[in-house]
Image (cartoon, rainbow, N blue to C red):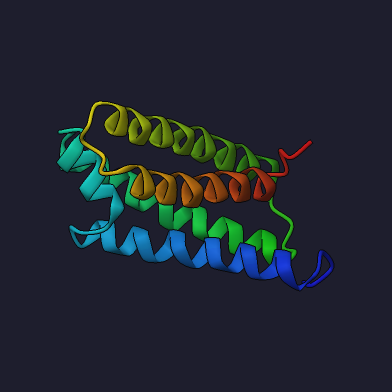
Length: 130
């Protein structure tokens, strides 16, 4: 479990907790997904709900990878699909910022940093880091 060191372990744990918590918040009607997707991008709330569910699933996948639990190839492909969706989510956030709907520069950089860490963790969990 700590084969990669305490720093990477804590990073993966933080990302997994973030994904799960943000997914639960998204399902309850709050959180980043609802704010960005429905508030600034004017997308239907069903899309934000789907992203929230994918977030919870991704958090579980990151936890499984962190614990060293080997996942079947189909799960790795599912993680790759979630990572692609996450990359699209990052692009949507950038578009909302460039169109003046996403807050100031520091808020955008904060979100970009978090979501880039999440994307990196998904790629690691799916074993796509090479």
